[in-house]
Length: 152
Image (cartoon, rainbow, N blue to C red; front, side, top):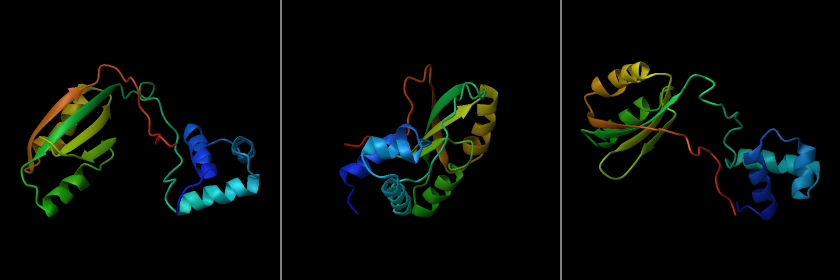
């Protein structure tokens, strides 16, 4: 289904703050509250809205180190890649991408300390026979982080 201007405006408002009351959303997008509620339900049902979440401050929660880890697989047969994708989908991984280029995967992790990262390295990389190599980059500063999708 194609999105109309009302849907796009509604999605933009929800990305900024998914807790905005229906009445305020209705005023902002120039629709009735009932219409906005129906549209939100349809957008959820059709998968445009995947989740409504709280964005947390990693520093305040002790997750002060952001790491980017490139991983090269030894074997890239479908079953081997699926096994790595499953392993790299654990709770210690914030984001995981299957990518092109020299590496096969790009992982993003938030950790409280380098010793915790060392434990994760042992579990995910050192003890994994399908990891040929991995390379880590440490973020010096979080300049911008967002999950927002740019809409017209």
